[in-house]
Length: 330
Image (cartoon, rainbow, N blue to C red; front, top):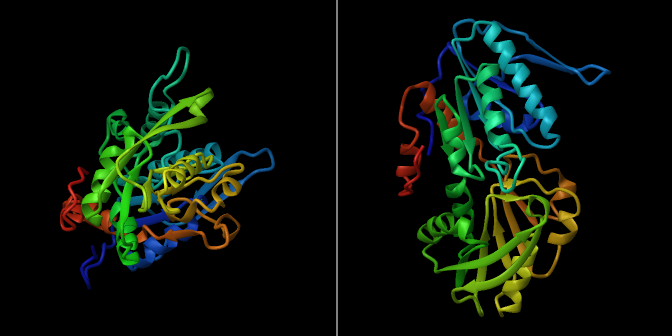
């Protein structure tokens, strides 16, 4: 997966970054061999946002890098204001590159009188001026169907799996934390040439915050488990790691895309049943959240840069994954 040597994006291309994850924006710009666009984003004393695009974008294809991560409402609003500013500055097309799509876990009504906030966010992005959206490992893939504009859904699976391949783990097993992640676990197992196990869990309480692990389907005794998921937020996956150790498995590796890591998750995850957590930089992970290097952060800048380059050049994005023998619809 590489951008062709010597081929530039051209003069009709601009790349901007919001304040959610500026380091990722810089990395993507380096891979594209360009400079980030100049933009000034201010927060006034009354907490209102102001955006000033400091260079001409008239007639250009513009890409904005902005994960809608903590503080979610602030980063989302910043993205919306940037989209509006670029649309009013006569950009030809504006693409919102949202590595982590906030509100993705609110993709359906689980009880009465609830919103479907993921759909609301999609409507806001479109109304603000987004012509296309790029995201990585959505919590629920059906969110793509909420959009009436092109939506390129990427996966960090090759990045994460390559790191695990380099580990050359012996007697390992890929473990899905629930039935909902079974298909993703199958793809891990295919790439890593490992057996598969599936855990069964029950959620209760508001937002399903209370988790109880009931059953493990598959052989894990004596094996090194690789627990996979898309998001670590409150750290409840520690219960899966504990349950695996109780079933005579070795301490687990946890492979996830989005390290949200809220509240007391760091304390919950810093335990003997968890050997290492592998995550990406879709969300910034400061040193204090890396649990003394127990959290390994891999960059998805090459993936995003390649996808952006291919979209701008009107080339297949699916080919990025097909070339790695990974069937992933984009």
